[in-house]
Length: 45
Image (cartoon, rainbow, N blue to C red):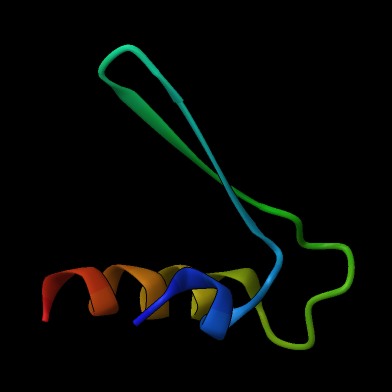
């Protein structure tokens, strides 16, 4: 699953071997934890 299908409010930044996931929470319809769990679940399985 693509992160943008969960919400287009995800942004990603990478620097060297680090990845930063940014979730803009201003206009979300659900709690930010919901989107974080959905993203992590899609990465695992």
